[in-house]
Amino acid sequence: MSRKERKLVLEPDQRKQLVNLQRRMLLRGGLTLGAVSLLTGCNLQDGDSVDKVLWSMSRWNDRVQAWLFHGQKLAQTYTPAEITRPFPFNAYYPEYNVPAVDLATWQLEVSGRVQDKTPWTLGRLQALPQASQITRLICIEGWSAIGQWGGVPLRTFLQRIGADTRAKFVGFHCADRYYTSIDMATALHPQTLLALDFDGEALADDYGFPLRLRMPTKLGFKNAKHIAAISVTNAYPGGYWEDQGYNWFSGI
Image 1 (spheres, rainbow, N blue to C red):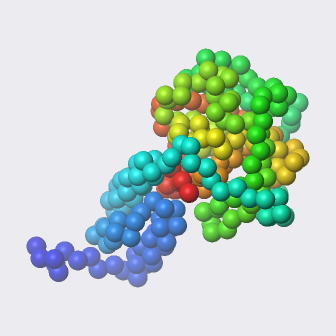
Image 2: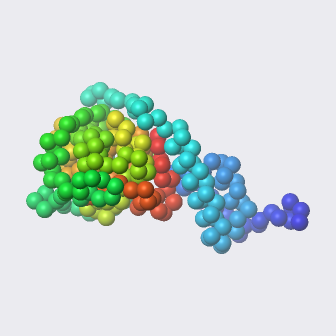
Protein backbone atom coordinates (compact mmCIF):
# COMPACT_ATOMS: atom_id res chain seq x y z
CA MET A 1 0.00 0.00 0.00
CA SER A 2 1.42 3.39 -0.96
CA ARG A 3 1.90 6.33 1.40
CA LYS A 4 -0.93 8.13 -0.38
CA GLU A 5 -3.25 5.15 0.05
CA ARG A 6 -2.47 4.92 3.75
CA LYS A 7 -3.39 8.55 4.42
CA LEU A 8 -6.37 8.89 6.74
CA VAL A 9 -9.14 11.26 5.70
CA LEU A 10 -10.83 12.72 8.78
CA GLU A 11 -14.42 13.76 8.97
CA PRO A 12 -15.02 17.34 10.28
CA ASP A 13 -16.03 16.10 13.73
CA GLN A 14 -12.99 13.82 13.93
CA ARG A 15 -10.69 16.67 12.86
CA LYS A 16 -12.15 18.80 15.66
CA GLN A 17 -11.51 15.99 18.14
CA LEU A 18 -7.90 15.70 17.00
CA VAL A 19 -7.26 19.44 17.34
CA ASN A 20 -8.74 19.44 20.85
CA LEU A 21 -6.72 16.36 21.75
CA GLN A 22 -3.50 17.93 20.51
CA ARG A 23 -4.15 21.09 22.49
CA ARG A 24 -4.87 19.20 25.70
CA MET A 25 -1.92 16.87 25.48
CA LEU A 26 0.58 19.55 24.53
CA LEU A 27 -0.64 21.67 27.45
CA ARG A 28 -0.25 18.77 29.82
CA GLY A 29 3.30 18.13 28.63
CA GLY A 30 2.52 14.52 27.77
CA LEU A 31 3.42 14.64 24.09
CA THR A 32 5.96 16.23 21.81
CA LEU A 33 4.91 17.68 18.47
CA GLY A 34 6.42 14.67 16.78
CA ALA A 35 4.40 12.32 18.94
CA VAL A 36 1.19 14.19 18.25
CA SER A 37 1.82 13.75 14.54
CA LEU A 38 1.56 10.00 15.07
CA LEU A 39 -2.12 10.47 15.86
CA THR A 40 -2.82 11.37 12.25
CA GLY A 41 -2.40 7.67 11.51
CA CYS A 42 -5.10 6.70 14.01
CA ASN A 43 -8.82 6.55 13.45
CA LEU A 44 -10.34 8.60 16.27
CA GLN A 45 -13.28 6.22 16.33
CA ASP A 46 -10.84 3.56 17.50
CA GLY A 47 -10.28 4.73 21.05
CA ASP A 48 -7.86 1.92 21.86
CA SER A 49 -5.42 2.98 19.13
CA VAL A 50 -5.41 6.62 20.22
CA ASP A 51 -5.14 5.71 23.90
CA LYS A 52 -2.16 3.45 23.26
CA VAL A 53 -0.25 6.25 21.53
CA LEU A 54 -1.11 8.83 24.19
CA TRP A 55 -0.32 6.63 27.18
CA SER A 56 2.88 5.32 25.63
CA MET A 57 4.21 8.81 24.97
CA SER A 58 3.08 10.08 28.37
CA ARG A 59 4.97 7.28 30.12
CA TRP A 60 8.02 8.02 27.97
CA ASN A 61 7.76 11.66 29.01
CA ASP A 62 7.60 10.58 32.67
CA ARG A 63 10.85 8.66 32.29
CA VAL A 64 12.61 11.58 30.60
CA GLN A 65 11.47 14.06 33.26
CA ALA A 66 12.51 11.71 36.05
CA TRP A 67 15.95 11.35 34.46
CA LEU A 68 16.32 15.14 34.20
CA PHE A 69 15.07 15.81 37.75
CA HIS A 70 17.81 16.79 40.23
CA GLY A 71 16.92 15.90 43.80
CA GLN A 72 18.92 18.76 45.31
CA LYS A 73 18.39 21.55 42.78
CA LEU A 74 16.21 24.23 44.36
CA ALA A 75 13.34 26.03 42.68
CA GLN A 76 13.52 29.83 42.63
CA THR A 77 12.45 31.62 45.81
CA TYR A 78 11.04 35.13 46.16
CA THR A 79 10.77 38.03 48.61
CA PRO A 80 7.69 38.82 50.74
CA ALA A 81 7.05 41.87 48.53
CA GLU A 82 6.54 39.56 45.54
CA ILE A 83 3.78 37.45 47.12
CA THR A 84 0.57 37.34 45.07
CA ARG A 85 -2.34 38.83 46.99
CA PRO A 86 -5.01 37.68 46.88
CA PHE A 87 -3.66 34.22 46.14
CA PRO A 88 -6.02 32.45 43.69
CA PHE A 89 -8.19 29.49 44.58
CA ASN A 90 -7.72 26.36 42.49
CA ALA A 91 -9.38 22.96 42.64
CA TYR A 92 -11.30 20.52 40.47
CA TYR A 93 -14.56 21.89 41.89
CA PRO A 94 -16.00 25.38 42.49
CA GLU A 95 -15.01 27.31 45.61
CA TYR A 96 -18.39 26.83 47.28
CA ASN A 97 -17.70 23.07 47.41
CA VAL A 98 -14.53 23.35 49.51
CA PRO A 99 -14.76 20.70 52.26
CA ALA A 100 -15.13 21.75 55.88
CA VAL A 101 -12.70 19.44 57.68
CA ASP A 102 -13.53 18.83 61.34
CA LEU A 103 -10.20 19.14 63.15
CA ALA A 104 -11.65 17.43 66.23
CA THR A 105 -11.87 14.14 64.32
CA TRP A 106 -9.21 14.66 61.63
CA GLN A 107 -6.17 12.41 61.67
CA LEU A 108 -3.49 11.80 59.06
CA GLU A 109 -3.50 8.10 58.23
CA VAL A 110 -0.21 6.42 57.25
CA SER A 111 0.11 3.13 55.37
CA GLY A 112 2.32 1.03 53.13
CA ARG A 113 6.06 0.56 53.45
CA VAL A 114 6.52 2.36 56.77
CA GLN A 115 7.55 1.15 60.21
CA ASP A 116 5.18 3.34 62.26
CA LYS A 117 1.57 3.46 61.06
CA THR A 118 0.24 5.44 64.00
CA PRO A 119 -2.16 8.20 62.83
CA TRP A 120 -0.97 11.79 63.24
CA THR A 121 -2.86 14.69 64.77
CA LEU A 122 -2.27 18.28 63.74
CA GLY A 123 -0.54 18.92 67.07
CA ARG A 124 2.00 16.15 66.45
CA LEU A 125 2.76 17.53 62.99
CA GLN A 126 3.23 21.03 64.40
CA ALA A 127 5.75 19.64 66.90
CA LEU A 128 8.04 18.40 64.11
CA PRO A 129 10.84 20.62 62.69
CA GLN A 130 9.33 23.26 60.42
CA ALA A 131 10.50 25.03 57.25
CA SER A 132 9.20 27.98 55.24
CA GLN A 133 9.48 29.00 51.59
CA ILE A 134 8.20 31.68 49.22
CA THR A 135 7.80 29.94 45.89
CA ARG A 136 5.74 30.07 42.73
CA LEU A 137 2.82 27.71 42.09
CA ILE A 138 2.36 27.11 38.36
CA CYS A 139 -1.06 25.90 37.22
CA ILE A 140 -1.50 23.74 34.15
CA GLU A 141 -4.25 26.14 33.06
CA GLY A 142 -1.63 28.80 32.32
CA TRP A 143 -1.52 31.04 35.40
CA SER A 144 0.96 31.22 38.27
CA ALA A 145 1.11 32.83 41.71
CA ILE A 146 3.73 33.35 44.43
CA GLY A 147 2.90 32.30 47.97
CA GLN A 148 4.55 31.77 51.33
CA TRP A 149 4.19 28.26 52.72
CA GLY A 150 5.31 26.76 56.00
CA GLY A 151 5.23 23.24 57.33
CA VAL A 152 7.06 19.96 57.78
CA PRO A 153 9.55 18.88 55.12
CA LEU A 154 8.13 15.66 53.71
CA ARG A 155 11.59 14.12 53.99
CA THR A 156 11.51 14.76 57.76
CA PHE A 157 8.07 13.19 58.08
CA LEU A 158 9.05 10.12 56.07
CA GLN A 159 12.13 9.65 58.22
CA ARG A 160 10.04 9.98 61.40
CA ILE A 161 7.61 7.22 60.35
CA GLY A 162 10.41 4.95 59.17
CA ALA A 163 9.40 5.02 55.51
CA ASP A 164 11.25 2.84 53.02
CA THR A 165 12.82 5.57 50.90
CA ARG A 166 13.78 2.94 48.32
CA ALA A 167 10.08 2.63 47.46
CA LYS A 168 8.99 4.16 44.16
CA PHE A 169 5.94 6.22 45.11
CA VAL A 170 4.28 8.29 47.80
CA GLY A 171 0.50 8.55 47.41
CA PHE A 172 -1.94 11.06 48.88
CA HIS A 173 -5.69 10.76 49.48
CA CYS A 174 -7.68 13.81 50.49
CA ALA A 175 -10.86 14.81 52.28
CA ASP A 176 -12.29 16.23 49.03
CA ARG A 177 -11.90 12.80 47.34
CA TYR A 178 -8.89 14.04 45.38
CA TYR A 179 -5.84 11.82 45.12
CA THR A 180 -2.42 12.00 43.54
CA SER A 181 1.06 10.50 43.85
CA ILE A 182 4.69 11.51 43.40
CA ASP A 183 8.04 9.84 42.88
CA MET A 184 10.26 9.24 45.89
CA ALA A 185 12.98 11.60 44.62
CA THR A 186 10.48 14.48 44.66
CA ALA A 187 9.18 13.41 48.09
CA LEU A 188 12.73 13.73 49.45
CA HIS A 189 13.43 17.07 47.74
CA PRO A 190 14.33 19.74 50.34
CA GLN A 191 11.52 22.07 49.17
CA THR A 192 8.74 19.47 49.29
CA LEU A 193 6.54 20.36 52.27
CA LEU A 194 3.58 19.03 54.15
CA ALA A 195 2.27 22.58 54.45
CA LEU A 196 0.43 23.63 57.60
CA ASP A 197 0.28 27.38 57.04
CA PHE A 198 0.03 29.97 54.31
CA ASP A 199 1.31 33.54 54.50
CA GLY A 200 2.22 33.10 58.17
CA GLU A 201 -1.19 31.82 59.26
CA ALA A 202 -2.88 28.42 59.54
CA LEU A 203 -4.12 27.16 56.19
CA ALA A 204 -7.52 28.52 55.24
CA ASP A 205 -10.10 26.07 53.92
CA ASP A 206 -9.56 27.37 50.37
CA TYR A 207 -5.85 26.59 50.54
CA GLY A 208 -6.13 23.05 51.90
CA PHE A 209 -6.85 23.08 55.65
CA PRO A 210 -5.50 21.41 57.67
CA LEU A 211 -2.70 19.89 55.57
CA ARG A 212 -1.60 20.14 51.96
CA LEU A 213 1.32 19.15 49.79
CA ARG A 214 3.51 21.97 48.49
CA MET A 215 6.12 21.28 45.80
CA PRO A 216 7.59 24.12 43.70
CA THR A 217 9.12 21.47 41.44
CA LYS A 218 5.72 20.19 40.26
CA LEU A 219 2.69 21.63 38.46
CA GLY A 220 -0.12 22.86 40.67
CA PHE A 221 -2.48 19.91 40.31
CA LYS A 222 0.13 17.66 41.99
CA ASN A 223 -0.06 19.82 45.16
CA ALA A 224 -2.85 17.92 46.90
CA LYS A 225 -5.00 19.75 49.48
CA HIS A 226 -6.94 18.57 52.57
CA ILE A 227 -4.66 15.52 52.88
CA ALA A 228 -6.14 12.72 54.96
CA ALA A 229 -3.86 9.78 54.15
CA ILE A 230 -0.31 9.11 52.94
CA SER A 231 0.98 5.81 51.60
CA VAL A 232 4.46 4.64 50.64
CA THR A 233 4.37 1.97 47.96
CA ASN A 234 5.96 0.30 44.97
CA ALA A 235 2.56 -0.09 43.31
CA TYR A 236 1.66 2.82 41.00
CA PRO A 237 -1.06 4.83 42.83
CA GLY A 238 -2.18 7.02 39.91
CA GLY A 239 -4.04 10.26 40.51
CA TYR A 240 -7.35 12.01 39.87
CA TRP A 241 -6.15 13.92 36.80
CA GLU A 242 -3.35 11.52 35.93
CA ASP A 243 -5.85 8.68 35.45
CA GLN A 244 -7.66 10.91 32.94
CA GLY A 245 -4.54 11.50 30.83
CA TYR A 246 -2.52 14.22 32.56
CA ASN A 247 1.22 13.59 32.58
CA TRP A 248 2.05 11.83 35.85
CA PHE A 249 5.51 13.28 36.61
CA SER A 250 4.49 16.86 35.71
CA GLY A 251 7.77 18.44 36.74
CA ILE A 252 8.58 22.09 36.13
